[in-house]
Image (cartoon, rainbow, N blue to C red; front, side, top):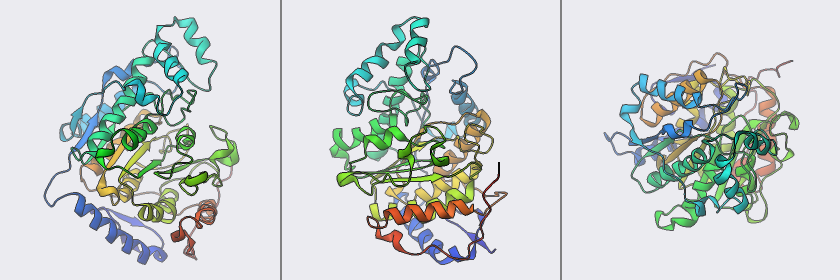
Length: 416
């Protein structure tokens, strides 16, 4: 295969020649959009929110994977690489209950607010009522801070005070449903921020939001909160394994595309197995997400940035490299004038999550990078899944009606 220069200056990427023309045209559009967003010679103002108070949500035992060390590892890496000094430092703010209650039931808000006043035995009993969550004395404050933090950075990016932002928050949010916490998630941070921009701050001119969820797990909570809302285009790429991968729900399938006026605005790309990596995700971007995003033309992008699909994270058992994430993020910079808010979701290998977040932060700061992925062929199953997704959505997004490139070099499905 030929070497093709892609959107971010300074990196080279091996892929099949059939993609040349379409990729070239897309890159030109992306470069033009990014050039409009960032004036020549002006360094991007990237917000970076980190607050040690969110470390107080901590498990009592060692078996839990969602721990404070996740944030500590990221912060150490960013500091060591000089990233923290180049960003606009931000501190967390507690979310007002009315904003959380815009997407969550009042009883749910009350539960999380009061949870830290319980003793240890009550905390364990309450947690057992839900799916894969734990509570501690610091859970209430951390949850309200996480929700408030994503609101804070999203508001500043939407207002133009920042070009983009990263919210290093925990507990994560995308599994949290309207009436219950689940999957390590207490409040749905990204959904709360999206609702805030759309309904509380109309003066900011945010009328269409693209939510991209690249966590290895399906963003079930976010999907359900905007399932009938055409103002939000929700895109989730995740391991599905025919319903055998967490959260073990059928609505992670590609046939769940939204309801009522929101039909077509919910997009699931469900991988059939483990080991998906850079090439698979790039293919999903190039042949599903980017064409639809161009037609949708969002005003801002909220990224549910889980890094448990990273190489080395055994929770997801997938293979995205740090620069693979950097490439996916680079491709998104061509939309919404580069206004992107990254909100941390999953990612349970401290080294993998730290390296991946750092690579993404450098992209937002305008740094160059080189993609040296060991395997740049998508799986056969990836091509099949992408075709199924396009077939399901082409009535709503005619740009997906065209044929996929033929004679593409593909990998065989991994055996177990």
